[in-house]
Image (tube, rainbow, N blue to C red):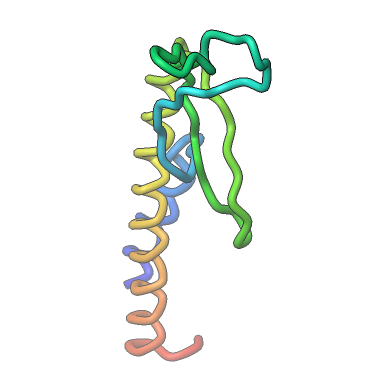
Length: 104
């Protein structure tokens, strides 16, 4: 049981940087009245922009990701999913340990 806890902790420590959220592609309309993005017949929106949307401490936020950084952002988002699974496993391992050995 203690071995399971230590294995999970080790995996967490070696996980690397991660990011919560999801990536999407956005097209925007600006505020200029005469811009091509406002054309009533054939609007040409600005973009594409890669946007990471996430929630931290109950607050929604987002940030734009440069095209060159999209592959790394995707890796970090995937690592966040691994982080969540590992923390869930760690909680379960601690509960199992207390059930088997108590609070010693």
